[in-house]
Image (cartoon, rainbow, N blue to C red; front, top):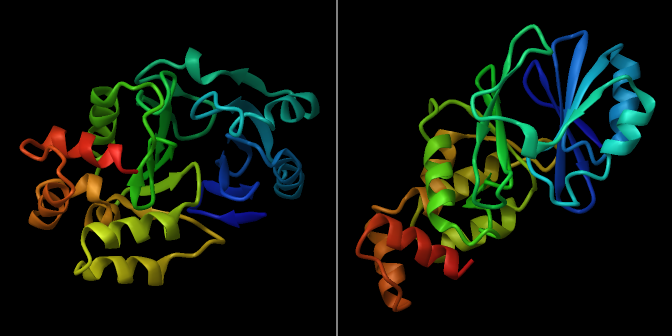
Length: 238
């Protein structure tokens, strides 16, 4: 299923929760986590777009299944996420796409930043951060912090739609937070996106200084003295 994002981002849902993307400038395109290869190929034809690059936010199998079919049916090149460099400019389109290395979920996790938007893969979701499969919680903490240094109006496109599940968790942490209900009213499963400002209003991992978050962790008997301890404690109960 295809849904339009801003002027250069198209979102494709595949499987139950996965979200893949086509970034384009009206004539050329980049596929990121293109698991819905059939839908992407159809869209390329409909919009008369030339696919130049296939890449991924990380190498987990649920994000890479479309790579082979996209490469087979186009002249695009593949750049694996592990081969991307921090700060690298992907100059395939009229406006560059910048790579941000964001390790933590996996060692090769990256985000793609362009035109006031960011594809965050499994580093940051709507309402929650990603799981830390590397075990390097410091890296994940820093990666999330790096994303949140971007302007608050930056549109965030994540690698999965876990919004309803994760907002339930946010309510359990901050039951009196009115921003959660407002967030859910704006939520559209046909186009899953939010701004970083909206995320900061609901995601407990981005609200580590809030008394309700600290009290929640203390009631759980978890470390909550420093911000990083709160981050790690929240990860333990995800």
